[in-house]
Image (cartoon, rainbow, N blue to C red; front, side):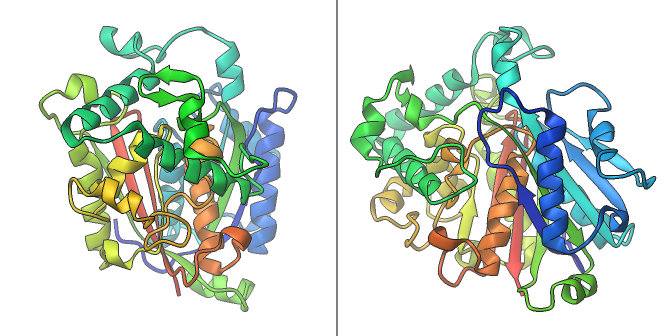
Length: 385
């Protein structure tokens, strides 16, 4: 989907973390008010809202919107597993780009610590028999093991990605994990095993949090924040899985490789850009081996060259294409509903030049990618004007 005449005018989020004593309402209100303040608008100005969450009860999003005001605006609930927040952003961008409203809000929230204390189920209800008894870590471990067998990848490669993202989290005040020292490859490898070859430090934490983005027509954006660089969504691709051989063991979590590759190609084509134009990329890295795969699937290197790209430092903060500059899911955290909107938060700051210690010099184009339940993939491109 090509997007026109729409800009990100405000972003806000809570620090992701474990908040046993805080409510969803409290977290969502904090993120939403920060985004409205950053945009320079009031809730009365919002013409349509999209709320992203996975685990809360029906109508939770409506109840949370009432915390901001009773304005009669339409509110839609978006849910697509890990991709929820980015798809809420996509819907809000389209609401403005299509002319349905002048200002739209995308708000995501989740308390995964409540789920971790709760049911004891694996993947949850509504899955087939095989799928329901294998936890996500096992699927990602199978994917990692397959790459090691086919490509000669070493656990050290996965550990290098994890260490990079932990150290990025230390520079991000919104990150769940903020180590007080430089995390090393050896430290990551020595952490407890989750599922061979993946360790605890190669895995995302159980997080709570909320994040929000406000979008508006470009003329409104310029009028509201005249001295601020304009951050505009260019394209948003959303695809579901296509059957491929071996899908039973690849699809339920990570999805077939074609899904990310095809979604990226569509997003690039609609934006009139290519991988070489992207200055910073944020991708789904619930486990470190994912990021390595996406170097290739998003077009940043040829198939089989991801390890070389990593070894040469090209995905480091000062490399050719920095990945997960905010710590990614591994350090920033992965509450589910707000994860994609946290990516938009980071890209907005990067493209404005406001990311502080983690700023990518000269960042003009950013990419946000998430996979949801292995069954959907979304790739979004934003640019500084």
